Length: 122
Image 1: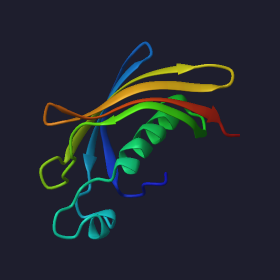
Image 2: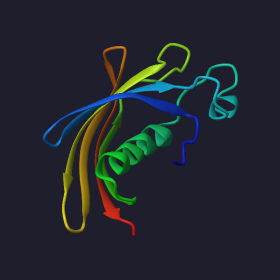
Image 3: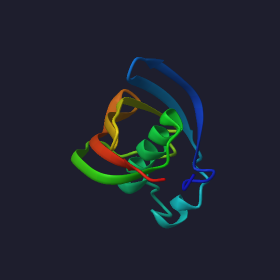
Image 4: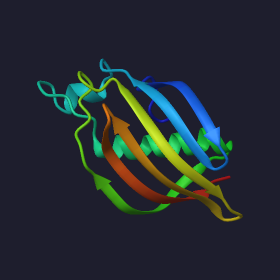
């Protein structure tokens, strides 16, 4: 896990290829000391990493991001206001890798929309 101690998984539910994962963000994490000290904001690349880590956890495979499209950051994730995130994903496994379509939501707002392909990284 690249994001050690950044978040904990509260719960995951699954219906077929659809997953809903509830996360708690550690607002005291080191990331927020540099991004930004007086007004902490979760970096977009960290939000993208959450999807990769959850795809790995849900598939049991080591993955490497090969392509991301339709990446849209639509709201700020402030750890002081948004300690909870919900990742809604559709994960489709193939022989070459894993396709993911997902949204990250906080306080009933969508913070990120992403379509990604992860290559299996043995």
